Image (tube, rainbow, N blue to C red; front, top):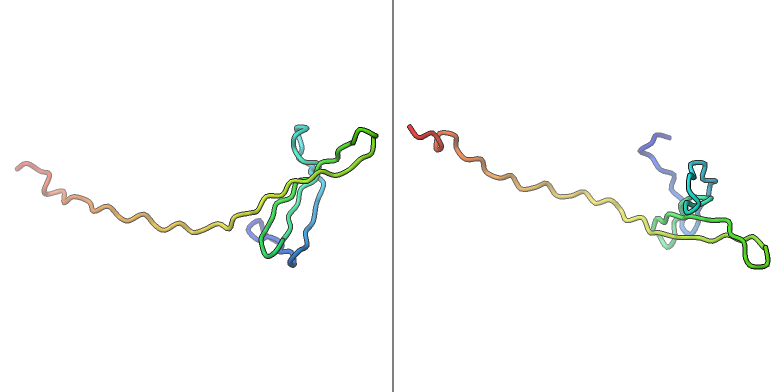
Amino acid sequence: MSDTQRFEHKNNTGSLFKNNYKTKDNQPDYKGTAKIDGKEVDIGAWINTDKNGKKYFGFTFEIIEPKTQSEPEPETPQPDINDEIPF
């Protein structure tokens, strides 16, 4: 699978993988994606500890907005070079 191809989950499924690139505490311990109600979602997961010492996962979810192809800028007409020459 090339870098431009992306695994596509079935609806209402996802996957998490250990974040081997974590360099700061505020970065997730696990990262992944899911498809929820037909929308692609980025997932971040942290291993947390509650006040009783029990471990649990905390999650963040962010909808991945589909990339839209921007319309090309309208071409600005270029002045005729002969109009700018004073002789």
